[in-house]
Image 1 (cartoon, helix red, strand yellow):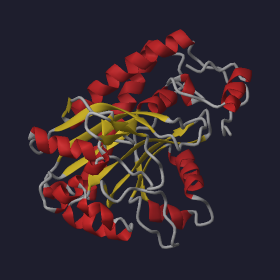
Image 2 (tube, rainbow, N blue to C red; image 1 turned 180 degrees about the vertical axis):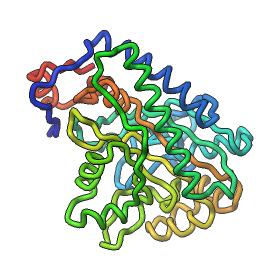
Image 3 (spheres, rainbow, N blue to C red; image 1 turned 90 degrees about the vertical axis):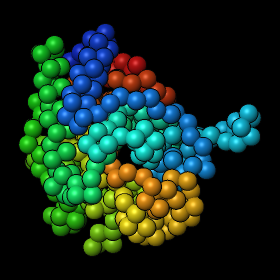
Length: 335
């Protein structure tokens, strides 16, 4: 059943024609901003991977990937959940030096997603990854990179409002950093999602750090696969979405696991079986470069910067009957 909620009196600022034009403009501008800010080169990326490689993202560990047989290889293939691990293998294969990285369009299917204003079974992101040095595996370097990404987003927003001055969006450039544990300490009686909403409403632009590990309460702020982000050096970029009156996660990112962090996190997450997969064997053997990376939601960024109430206004996907009915009654055109 759809969990879509449309703000009372909502009407899109842009027409469908303007929206399509603005999506193209935003994507071109932001890609240029991001590639310059982080020294990234555009590459092609896979839609499918082989399960035995261990390259697919297991997300929280319960989501089922779309899988099918490939007669010519006598094996199977999976549509990616994300490219978190593939990018690191690619940087190794391409021989990129420290300080240089890649970005790509990542298109995925996550069939387990609950459909609501900001979630779809179709996922589109700018996935990026950059080679770093051992000395850069620090919280300070993580914060600096977050600030560069936020600056790229704010600059793209300003460029979009130059073309469409009627857009009522103004983002805060200053990032407020807080750890998941500090957030729990502030609001112990709230759920992780409620904590994000309360904190983002006050601070507007937020980076929540150290997501994935167990909190002192025994819970977790959010689920993170144990084999790409280092849980002590990661986080989410969140903006306050005025129209929806809630926090909107735009990016999950972080400094990736090294051999020591991977060894610990696989054991902590009861995922030791992954040690035998190609990606994990290479990483544990020290054969992969140290990297930092993340994904930035394309449709979510379009939603935020174009003041849209539903992700279906900026991407083409499949929706249940309830969502179609709710949006039709609200005069919302789903692409």
